[in-house]
Picture (cartoon, rainbow, N blue to C red):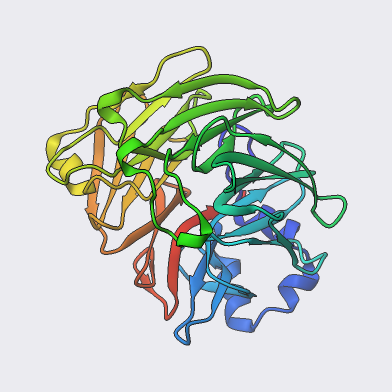
Length: 361
């Protein structure tokens, strides 16, 4: 893997996956894998209503699939341990960890009592630990659960996210800081997915030291943006943290939806053209960074659009209509985009892809 790009090519993936795993694929799937330049994974819903997670090529050919116990949301991957994880959709309580090299059976973990998952997490730099965003719903506190990859991902601790309703998080470039998007929305499993505090939301972005659990930096949003839920994050080409938001206010208001910050610096929101902001429909469902090409990718299922930005200038480079646009991940060039209606890079599948995709690299 090239450290500067964070991407993995087909040859590296085949070597990592192992000959036995590849030999076990159906001939047409092994052929598709041999032709692809990149490999991705995404959760899905099958036509019969069951759920799973699939490995697929850059052109949308499904290579392999694993059954999930319930609907999943986000995914994470460690290129060091060759593990991928699918997290249950909020307020779900399971996560499934899969060995992409075929060396181990899937492991299913369950959230601790009084906790549920928020659908996202990430691995430590060495791949030995898994971090998951969780809700301590009795006290309405965001937490990070810590799971030990050397012991069947047993839960070994937790620390706060220093905010309400944490959603996505990612490991910063230094390998020790977690960048966490606290959406600011209070929920409780007794009320399903109902948002309980829209009149007094508290969105924020925090940096937390994984070694101590200490708060390093916190950015609350100003009062006029209190209904702007900070939802998803990724790391930029210079180590900056990019974030994307979903607005819970009036539809005719057009707040900024994307921004970035670095440690020790204030938040910087992008001013997008009005037609682009309108196209995003106040809802960025996913964000990804192509660090090699200095690009930011955004998708909006509500707006039915995928947008590509220049990470250096913030300029809009491409705006494409994609019905039910869902996941986005860095590809060899630009981004791969999935949709709820089963499209992945223009290939139609019989499954419905869920909100996020991850590149295995």
